[in-house]
Length: 258
Image (tube, rainbow, N blue to C red; front, side, top):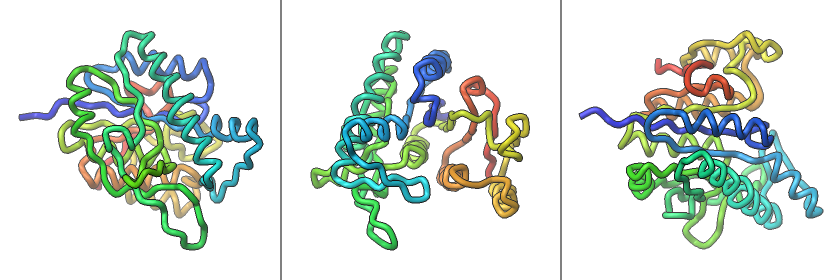
């Protein structure tokens, strides 16, 4: 028996931080056919809130150091402000939605990242994903809105990169659904020339990605996004696309298995 399709959209960057772009994204998201779920980031909002509260933001290679004070900020912003704003806007569009962290329904469990060269603080590495209760929500046409927070089942929340949340959730859902994971951000796809938005690579397999990475054409934050994505394809996700708001239904860069 063929599996029902589930579209999992991960939205981050300016798309989720700016009122007009978020409204446009959610309007297009509401028009996607079939079952759907949303994963969001919110890093700029967390940085802005920390500044207002007089808490210093520390980043290493684009990754946030999450000490106790910053954990409180990201919990407020990711689990509260950004998450519930998205849920409220989906409700306004006639879409029944629920916002959750990894602690809710114990759907995503992590361990505190071990200290090697850098102490990232309360940052989690995923060790278990349990989507069975989320499946029940999806069957009732409820849209899960997943915040980039997990927990260690010992009472502590942990900050987790939203791309990782999206990839791990997609792999877990793939046991039950035909999953398409769509990363939606500012650019129209993976670009051959990062300065030229018309240079979208229509499709990309892992070997081609590594060649472009070695040449320097693909660099910075796109590398972990693609590493996560190709790993998810190996683990059962049917299709992954990287695109912008206009390309949400079709378009952008499609990642292919070898």
